[in-house]
Image (tube, rainbow, N blue to C red; front, side, top):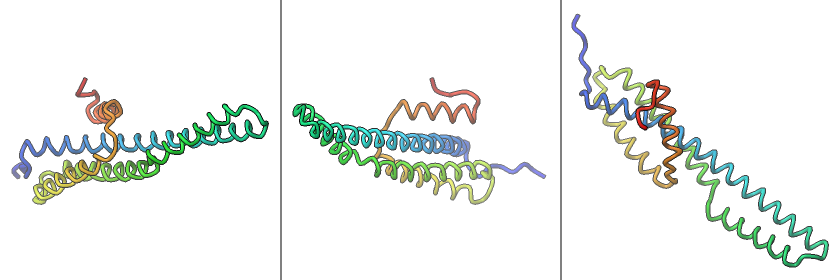
Length: 166
């Protein structure tokens, strides 16, 4: 029995491997980004509570008009920041992207394990389309290079035993 040749070219096989790893990297990145937004929103909320409580206490003691004014301004500024940043929406968007990139990584892994099938070429084309669509969707959230590099090194260590990049 002759060895079965892959349906995907060598270049396509490399693209499947890289697609698998980059999808895992992005999945981890967006999960981490969502956690960052949650922590940031908690900090803003607790700060608003603290400042508004301080303003109330200062006003109740009939003292420190300047303190009351400063704490009231700080509370209003934090409320505006919270409104402008829309952290809840960014958390939802990041978690959605994390889920979709994770699912895509699984699809790349499945294709990697079955690149000798007749459907490999069709699956590969479909996955390339998904990458393009997800990359476009990802553009709405910030690109934090250090965070992305952290997850790139992690995924490379998991799959290769060492990071590829410096």
